Image 1 (cartoon, rainbow, N blue to C red):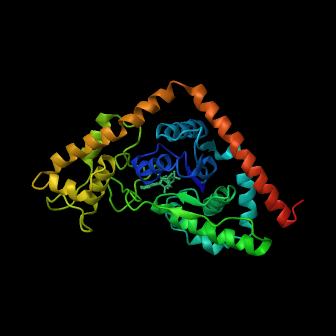
Image 2: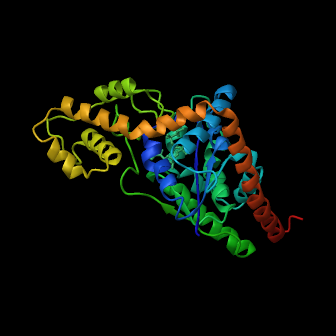
Image 3: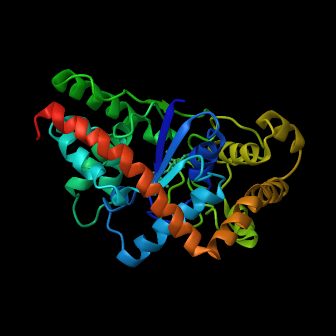
Length: 326
Ligand code: AQP
């Protein structure tokens, strides 16, 4: 089976953008691929995280992965910082990555703008650590949202460069991006992607939000001028809401448009809230069960690290031998 690797940052509470753009698909492809899923805490600290909150969010992210249907018997689930080879390989890949490639990354440029206390070298280096994550496991495909496409492209560039210098070592990974849901936008500003670190909490629907809060957030979501409920480039807010409706209900957008023809935004939003609440019900039920069973979650984390370590150690041995690091 081909290998898949993907990760999520414990940088806040995951939202329906993370779910529809990535995690839901992670569960769906488990039968088809040999999957490795990681909570990338070393990536999260490229922006300051309060230690106690980071610790809790890391465990919560593992629960989110499990509640979304990822089975730790089928897939490897672990925490990035538990495997030291990720940092070790990132350093090595740094030595062959041109700074110019990192400076042109869109995510770096966006996040650097919001840094009040100066930009860290770690933020610039984020894609190299991501390349290390991916290349360490001989990954064939990386399921991500559209925002991460550039980073997967860069990991191919780095793999090729290493292979040219030191001989065939790394596979060149492909991104696996679904057309629908690849970029869910903020509910309060449809020009920005929905983001965990958005300070406007009404921009995101978190996966653990209660039904009442989901209704309230959808009620407050911005719409476009005019009354039509239709997906069109000049209607970015309504188009985003229709995408969310479609992905949670598995109905094509055209059918939803017909259903809400001549109906008001208020009626559409009530329907959308219901669909989101129902679409998250099973996930939330499983999440609540995991909340009551912290020992099980810690066991999954430990066993996942043991499995990942085996693979990572053997790849690092090969890398060091090829480079003359003996
Ligand atoms: N808005 C989105 N729509 C679709 N997919 C998304 N993803 C993130 N936002 C959206 C995908 O979710 C996966 C995990 O993301 P991440 O935690 O690694 O980091 P991110 O992409 O930087 O997500 P956030 O929510 O914006 O976090 P912060 O604010 O901390 O940077 C990835 O596959 C991503 O593509």
